Amino acid sequence: MYIYSVMRAKAICIFFLTLFYTLDSQTGPAGVGTSNTNVLWLKANAGTSSTVNATAISSWNDQSGNGINVSQATAAQQPSYATNVLNGLPGIQFDNNSGSTVADRMHATDNPSLDNTSGYSFFNVVKMNNIGTDARSVLSKRTSIDTDEAFMLFFFSSNYFYVDIDGIANRFNTGTAAYSNGTGYILDVFFDGSLAAANRSTVYEEEILRKTATETSTLVPDKASPLNIACTHSTDGRPFGGYISEIIIYTVAVVPAQRIIVNNYLSAKYNIALTSNDKYAGDNSGNGNYDYEVAGVGKEATGSNPSFSASTCGGLGISATGTGFDNTDYVLAGHASFTNTQIFTDVGGMTGANNSRWQRIWYFDITNTSTSIQTNIEFDMSDGGVAPVTLGPAADYVLLYRAGTTGNWTELTTGSAVVGDRVQFNGYTLANDGYYTIGSKDYILSPLPIELLDFNAIKNDKRVDINWKTASERQNDYFIVEKSKDGIVFETVSMVKGSSNSTRNLEYLETDFNPFNGISYYRLKQTDLNGKYTYSKIVSVNYHFTDSGMDVFPNPNNGDFNISLLGLENKEVLILIKDVSGKECCSKVILTQSDREIIAIDMAGVLAPGTYLIMASSVNKLYSKKIIVK
Image (cartoon, rainbow, N blue to C red; front, side, top):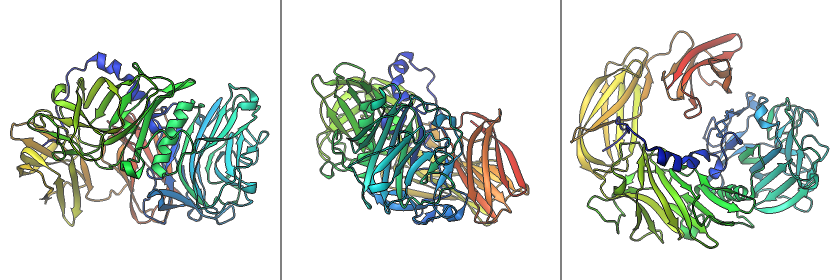
């Protein structure tokens, strides 16, 4: 059994790093763009301060990597989290209460990355409840009417959709395209200052061009204004009256191939049919509703999206930079599983003595005009949601394919290289729609990491209860529960015999009767029969709250940590994270519910390794503490 390997690859082949550099670059929605161009990404299924239905939302965190988080500190103006709005997924519900002090809305402070640009691409998924004669704004960046206005996208008169770019001078609407309550829409707005004035602004609805409009500005300059969600500006009392499920902003005009890919991702995710350019059939019920994390490569005469990172598609990355990648060619992929692990069943058709495969399967939809498309394909263990481990020889890993949702697998090709926790299949020519995943012909020598289902440490009176679950075990000798005062130097709490080999869920329970005073960090060390060992994630227990009023744990951390506050019940608290130069990396306002409040901060992958200052302020109290991000 493998959880987290302590063995690291000692050498990495530069050739393969160069070959796959493009996969790491396309990390935006559907594998389009990077944090340099994808400046904002709000989606209701991530980054919300609550995921409980009908619960008020005080913050909604940006997923683009730029930290442009929106928040609302005033309880009367907080929207609510709503489950099952579109295709079983949540939306953020902004009510229909009118008035500048009660209408729901969220804001982010002025950020120059949102303007000072000659191009925009806006993608919006909305479902309205109360379209009417009032302006109901999805998003805007302005301080008041035509003041410091970079943009505004809103429903207004005659149920049309309206657009302002760089003020109201060239305001336009969708004309004959009117919108209805209770219907989910994908609405795109594009501005390209490099085009002739008459063609600079366009609106698409589900891949149908609804409007081409004149825009006199070639550049939207830097505007000293906040970002507003669900309102025209902060002091305006007109309500939104509907749901917002996703907002994506690029500060470039994406090329048509990228627009098509993003819209196919949104269409599959929210079950909103595209009227044109539907390039992905994996979301159809007959194909199994492979709706999740759809990403793609594609090419048109005006430009291409040649690759997408494994981080955008559940652990699968594809680069189509070889032969056969022609105009109007596309490869889109999506999966149907929120979880992933190594499994040993449903491996019919595989060769080898010890067969396994990933639980997660992708549907590939290949649109090919002539020559078959040559691709580089990779499976990333950590991006796939399974624990990294020292992988075996590349030749033990196979790319699996079958035409239907069941049946024997075909081994299409063996691995070309193993780089870190990635298995790569380079130079493979894709030809057939269908179902793909990665398999191992020898899971003992070349494992696909087995997922540790759960590992928890919970304070229980004067002791700490530690429990963990495994989905399966292979050659597992024993576990050691370890604890630490600082998260660096660990000592043994207890040793527990493993089950050697198991294919069923098993649960283990241990108790630490002598936790450290303060914060205790716990991890699980698992050792195989051959002596190889791996580690779990680290969890922490705060055995008491400090007298200082604020504590941060774990510390050091990877950007994922907790802030505990004492004595600030029912207070608005501003949380700031700054680097050593004083640059603000994150800010959020929370309303505490109890005298001892714990706030979870998830900035893993956002905060670079280094030292940061955490500040919490409320009324006349100010707390600060340094943390180290590894």
